[in-house]
Length: 346
Image (cartoon, rainbow, N blue to C red):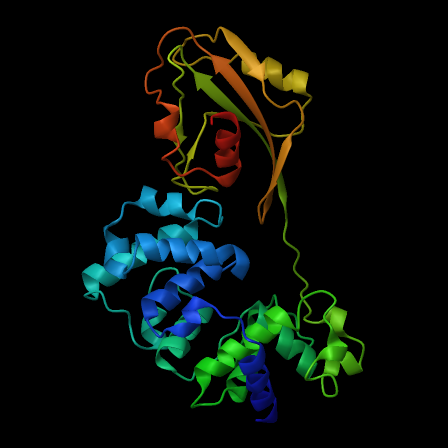
């Protein structure tokens, strides 16, 4: 257990002071873990603090409406996390009397909680001896022990889980799990780690074999799709705007947007303008069309590169369903649209 003891000692001297580490409350820990999926601590911390102010316990979160939850989540991305968070809060409140399951297997049954999150909550809240396995843990273990298996393969995860579990101190699961993740976040970072100022620099396989930049090994590349989106700002004579709620299973489900015309390849600004000129709202023709950005605004998602143009279409008279800017600002929008609103409709 030499590795584990050294790692925990490092953690006790170097750990960041984070609020979810000062509690064993499963609601607080669950909330922090959901927020920190795909999100850096520096970005996630203000959201965590705001959520606890608005929703201090699981029952308050359960009683909120989805738009409230999505609005508070705005800017974090991966919005399915927020929808699952809200669903699980309602389930825990109505079906489990407001009490989270007290073990790994029970937690794993909740929506939005996978193996890593269940292990984190179980160990941090209840000190259940189950090892966490996230990107940081993959990286530390693969480098230190020289495991060059392809981490994109399911069978590899099983091997890493066995290794992590074998290193876990049965009576100190919470501290070990926090330690190995913190070590990966602060010391054994993905690119250009400071290996020569590392507690394991005399025993790390990757450093001794000059393999640090090659581990962990992952073969699968994420396919990125390019999309070209034209958002239409439909404004009537009362300065009211049309917005709509996204439906279906695509990106940003249940968030709001302006009416959208999508093109399937890059177009010149003139070509896009010709397309927009044919647009009618309830058979009403706009009296003026302005292209607000000739060059695409680029917005990257995990699997999509979005190229966005905004057009303002002015109409004579009232538009059915149009709302005031003040009302629109209450809705949850994708961050790229939220930023547009904040910049153009102060």
